[in-house]
Image (cartoon, rainbow, N blue to C red; front, side, top):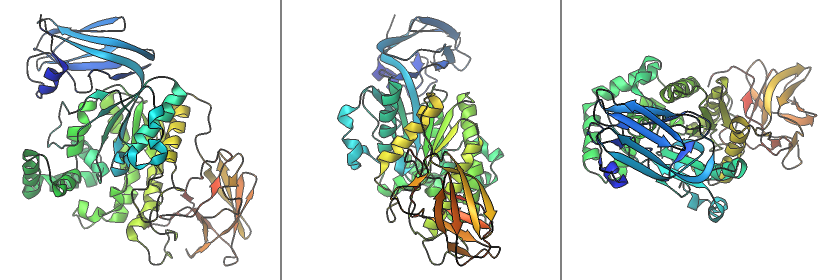
Length: 501
């Protein structure tokens, strides 16, 4: 009988090779998801019988005509105990993975703010020596024209390099008291379309247009191939590759499915607020239309990923875009401002549409960010809020995980009354009147509102409007806001009007 080393497995880049091999996410030091069926898959000789043994379970399956096999382990209990996972086939090949534990597994994906490193955030860097029971799998950045079966990466007994992913895992482990594994697959300035499988062209019209244009663009495809043939890439090649549609999904996400996980943290959207006209060359497609579509696309993307993973309860944690750019309201009367920053408010509204699906959460970051820097360093509260949402929604903890959310707006004479949920202890961070509210009448003219708290409501008035009809809160690129609940979590942005950008 021959035993294959892990190094040998990594060298087997093509699943069509006959030797027994496991899919890319299965390496030494991995974390398996607790309390779910755990798919284990790979390749062997066609027709070979494959046996997987782990934690007292022994299961068999036959490789199909292409050599692919899959075995689903029954749900496992969390454990810090290091265990072996053994795989062997009827030809005598065997693979043994060492130091396998069971806990909570999350994929962390998106663009540059998900990549943003822990070492650049002092508050999180100081937590690194205290981090226990965290493991990570970093998917190497690359692209592919077709969906791939393997990717580059290996599990390590160290925290992820991403500040948000590390902080999230750190606080989640503090609450869960079990191993936490993070699969990090992200790339700066990538759009959501970069992470979409090609078959979504059937449900997303503008993506179909993008892929038709991409397929017809011989120069772009040749440029991509030239870059792939010439690693390492130059800086310009790096930016060029990550800004293309579909090809990141093919190389950096598809090979991970259906590795069992609790869910996916998605920190992306900046790219979809910028240069939208350049992403689709059709004259009907504009930055505004792209932002308005983002929410619907995000929901379809989530549903498609759940299909890929075969898990309708796969949880998605979306990070709202933090503050950036101007402080004026995003309104028809906004005056001169940074157009890209103006887009931030509208894209946040689209991100919140994810909440229309079950098993989703949105971490509110509208009070964070940097007016001049699209890569803010205040990642600690982002991580803390993500962990709170995961504790409540996936660990069943009784914690306050969200700030006030508008339920209705009621007109009363010359004032509007805003009602909230999650508003127990409604207050402001500085003890002053709430800021960030605007009012408009039937003309659509926006003016700053005077706001005061009454119980779990906010009363809005303005001397400039006798009969206000609409209100917006925190609806700007970098709004000045101070409204929080008793847990100190910020109120979510909203608007009660239906005006278009």
